[in-house]
Image 1 (cartoon, helix red, strand yellow):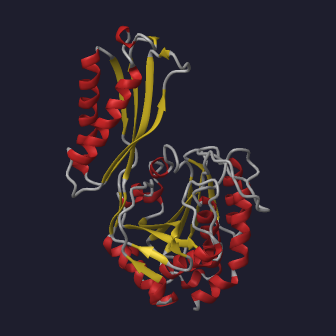
Image 2: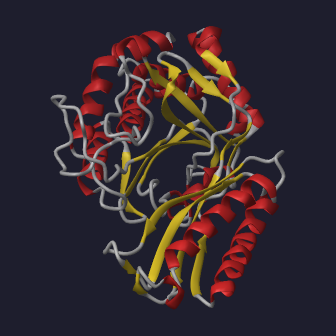
Image 3: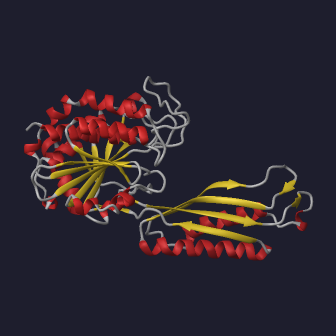
Length: 392
């Protein structure tokens, strides 16, 4: 079968799907319209579909008569970002936008489902199409796994993708091993003693303490942890005070910590707490520090990465595949699937410098070159229609 031709034939439809989904952007675990759209499309293909998995998740099972199943995943949620550009399919949800490309991920998987259903007799595995909520916040992958679907549908391996504007449109980028970091976060409230800005010696200034603590966090990352292991400590929220001459009582900080190494992931919050305590003890200030462990790092299975590379190279051409990349400090809860079965997550090139499509993920002006969508469909088809050791 000619996978390139099949993907080309559905190119217009996958763009239409993406634009429909872009218009109805919804926040994490509120993807009610999105989930309904997805489920109705899948049911229209004649697939057995299950709704409301882990609140708003949707799954559909394609039985190809095999004893094993490949899980293909797309995330559904959008971001609290106001869309900047005025395209005809602009988000109709005020202040909410698909600024991370999840509309594209869903459209690719829906189109792939249509193609696989039409050519079910050529599949080398059963397929579980999984549309998950909440990737941008608390994560829907783990709650969906906890419902038992991996065991129920005999899932033996998994794959997913993410659009990426720093990868050229028409290409896919695949990397074995460390791909994306654990995206943990923290919150800190410093309790000082407010007063007049002219008399700081009579106060306990939480803003000054916050500044010292932020500097210490930077020192932890730069000087007190190994430079051989990637890590990021970023303080992204600072809130305190509301008057130019009043020292406030409290200061609030929050931010993100990104790591790959398990030991480093565990020791950094301990070092942060020690730094906070040292600064606050000097000033006799109190504090509350909360560190939240989120998703694990996303580690691609070497065998699955190789299987995807080979399948795509065979069906679409070796020039399509970019092998390897620098690990990303971004995070994704697709990582949970990789903790249960061999899994591969790859980047779908969506950037086009000549057309000015270069804005990063989460930007209010985020756009993609929509011709990338057919490449994503073709990549999924190449994997599903070629023999793979990890199918079972």
